[in-house]
Image (cartoon, rainbow, N blue to C red; front, side, top):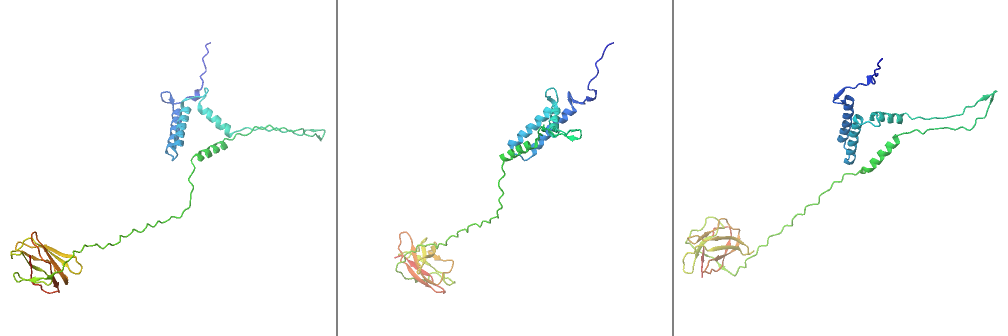
Amino acid sequence: MDQHPVPQNISSYEFRLVGDMTLKQFLQLAGGGFVGLIFYRLPLPLLLKWPLIAISIFIGIMLAFIPVQGRPFSAWLLAFIRAVYSPTEFFWEQKVIQKDGVDTAPTETHTLSIPKFNIFPIIELGIKKIKALFPKPPIINTIPVVTVPDPIPQPIPVTPVVESIPVPEVEAATHTDLVSSPETANILSGLVYDNEGKIVEGAIVEIINSETGIPVRALRSNKLGQFTIATPLSSGKYTILTEKDGLVFNPVSIQVNNSIIKSILLKAK
């Protein structure tokens, strides 16, 4: 009679998802990638984040495709976890044996103990070493200090220094009726003539405050030799200087007292 091999692992059939990859392998690989994604999203330092991501993906590949000594890596991992959480201890004690109603003295007792293996102190020590690499800055309870800005230095007002024009001794101004006098008080107007009695166009007429020596008005004579200031002067004494190329004019003075001033005649000497 022909003997046929007995089918093995009938109940261990696994659904093939893609090619030779089973659904279990796909879930193991996806689990490693998902854990790596979690580490990537956590706010960890780069020196710690990327090694954890690489370890997570490597464990997922090991669980899915790489056996160790002919056994799946998941079997080794489960065996390691069982060994950690299910340690074995053996104790031996000598019992007292009664013989004819008399207790015999117990002999020396020996206890055989296999130390319990605990992985948690090792994990805790590793976590402490990792935390030591990234010390947290000390928290200092400080009261917020309000900084008051320094006052902006204000510029010291500087009075502009105006060079005064030295005014020589002058004679009183000569008035004329050749032109009509202004109708407004404290307005100066007049004529500029040369030494021959001809009108002078473009002569510069400068009015200076006699008390301060500061010029207050400056204007030119027109084509008819006439000049007129536009705004009234303040009350006081003034000196009038006249300049024209090729001509020399004596300075004259005039008193302004809030009244109508007749036109002035400025004649070269």
